[in-house]
Image (cartoon, rainbow, N blue to C red; front, side, top):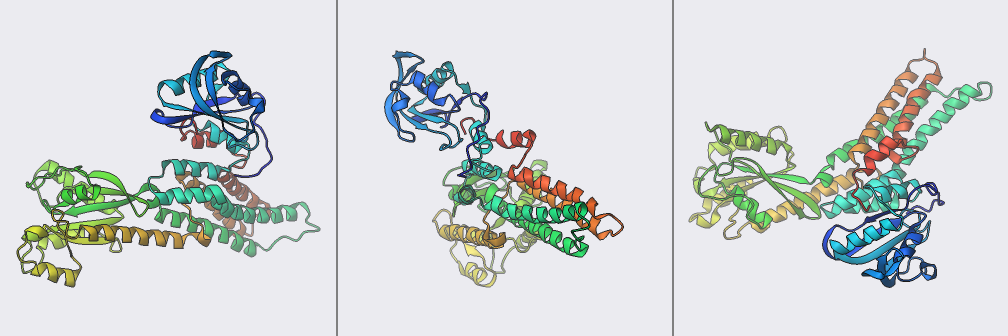
Length: 479
């Protein structure tokens, strides 16, 4: 948390209340109050006077109807925080009651009857931002941490929340632009005392900022899979064992498996976590020439899935591979699924090893062309598939970390990337303006101001309500 001085919203802002834990059956539910009247409201519904309670220390007691101690609602722990030493920077009271549906609802109603207003989505985090406890990038990191499916994204989010890595890096870009803007303004306002800075030097300094912004966006685009999940497509001809492998990796019967070729007619996807990363497995329709319109659509979607995937598993039925090697169809299909992405990680698998009597040709293909034997039924090779997937994920993750500027491990949101791209475009206009010697130097300040406005929106400095609404509307009620 930041240690900014406490700056409350206004005295007119209502004290808000919401359930901070998910609704439904649970051992404990947390009801959170925040605002000027949080302690006063809690006093009206709690069995002990809060004036005697030390902040940030829990006390045992009972919640009752407002000013009606005989109407007991629940046995609770109450935890008060005094402004500014709280998440929102305001007075905060947390009520830890029993979970479920009835009791939390009754506690919320008691708080409302005592004077609290039900909070909207993201209201608590928004107050933390306005009161200087968080910058906007940290607020968005809270959202990332909540929605993270794998621990790598949650680690990036927590790192930014603790160390302000995003804001720290981008503040450096902002200060570089402000320094140039100040030199231009000084030269315009005090022409007799301040010499006009060399245009070429200004262009070089602005270009350096543009390159840093573009590099950050490029590396973020390459590591977007950390946020969205690594997509792995399972491909091959019909009846090669794709759905069987898909189910085995998920440890559940998700895709229908039959001896009949062409059972899967569409892509089926599910998510699991490997090496701390959310992995989106995509089971695809068998690849082959067909006159069946529905199956053909499935084949087209399979090829599309191959293009969109980050990694590929290609399966071939070992029982139909002869001593002469792979069927010609497999060579054609492998080329089709790789397309123009030769660098995309690919694992080639020879399936149904459990029913093979002679595995000589399998061993030859393994040695000469990197094919791996697999039998989901017996378990042969399944561990090797998981090991390859984890190794590939770790390699991709290592590359993502290595490519981040100055070791800043981050995964920018779409909004943040858009702000950076727009900022770079304004700086390009400033560079073009400087290159035109016929243009007065003061014209450069216009695109520089626009660039700074984009960075301010990114960091939450004098940000418009429209931008804030867009960010905080993504939060759940209670956060």
